Image (tube, rainbow, N blue to C red; front, side, top):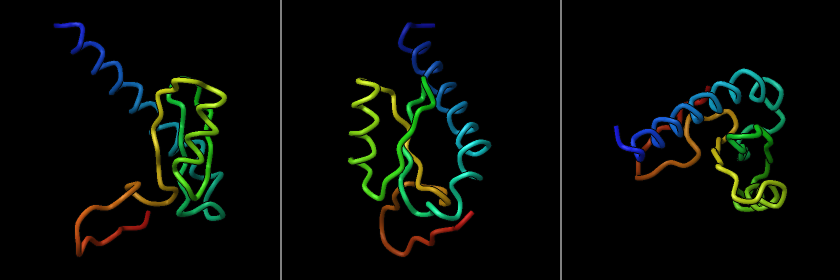
Length: 92
């Protein structure tokens, strides 16, 4: 296995754990008052920011954790953004 393969696997594992943390710990606490806003999570520290503006949330998180490996969620939705036309958004 190449070093780059190990890194990609480690990153994927971190993202899986971050998603589990979001669903188990954060989503119940933030719904329904923050529904539709963007949550940006530092995958290593699990510190996060919530804002209607993705960049604003990311900037505040980066100010506390420079170079943070971020994962973003749209609270209450399965995807942060949708692409294309005629895409139905399924609410969770």
